[in-house]
Image (cartoon, rainbow, N blue to C red):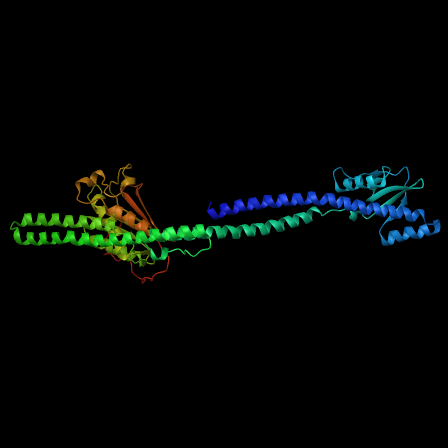
Length: 457
């Protein structure tokens, strides 16, 4: 669950409980005053009706009763001993009004919700020994209906949830900007990682200030590292170049001269691996045709009798990568397969496949050799790790480490496994699109532009 949804659900639950508590409190505080007010109005109506009937002669009394029925929707009926009445339900608003009317009009007052099967607000009272029913409109004591409360509850809850969404977004926005800046730092894009320090919240301003100072320190450290690598590369390769020249001029034995030259080339290759691993791999990234890059990595081995290639890559497949670093990644994987992926007959059978999955391109490079020991698989991409068969071979143990480091810096993933049918398979997840766009490669370059004598495995 994301932080946005966690905060939203917590705020929504809090607001829901608050609305329900407010609704219950309002209903409780509203019903009692309403019952007393209704009872007072009904008591006044009964008293006025009783006084009018007492002081009116029989002939005018009929007109009075008719006027009450027409103007006030109040009817007067004689109360018989045989009348059957039903009181209001206990603890209801009607029961509260009945208790208040009995207190005001006397203990002989009868308040009912139904008389002889006719519903209404029935109030029984006496005039000079005669008993009467006063039938008033029941709407006088009706409270707000449940459907009305439900509408108000839904409306209040909807506005509360809308407010929760807005509040959660305001809370999460600084964290989202901080996460984006951290990702840019990871991609060595220090300039784009700057956060605004002119924000109204002091705590967020302090965090942004500390983050910017950290980014500046990392940028200076990165610049120093690049300068140091350039110096190391120059200072190490210059003596090697002099040694190579002295060997060519000063060693008469051709066989010894060739062995010494090979040793120097091996030293130069090891230094090159060290420097490539130390570099950040974050050169200018652009959209590149994957098929062309694979073709460049395989081209030196096309036509060799001991190499069989099977390439299945869509011509339109593109990845967002630095061209030089991508060539290094693919060359390292292919060289690793050439060294350790030979089958029992001495042949190297290499299968290369690529497919698009959502925003990534999955590239699988598999050899058909003996594979690696299961306990060694998690360590093959660690710096300087060399499995048992590789310890007798020349190398630095940085080839697959460079692959993983470079791919992860691009936001991808590197997975190394043993194939079920045998051999080692390296799976690369490469971003199919550049975050800020990129130049679109020319189409039409084919990965299958290898000579026809290459055969599938």
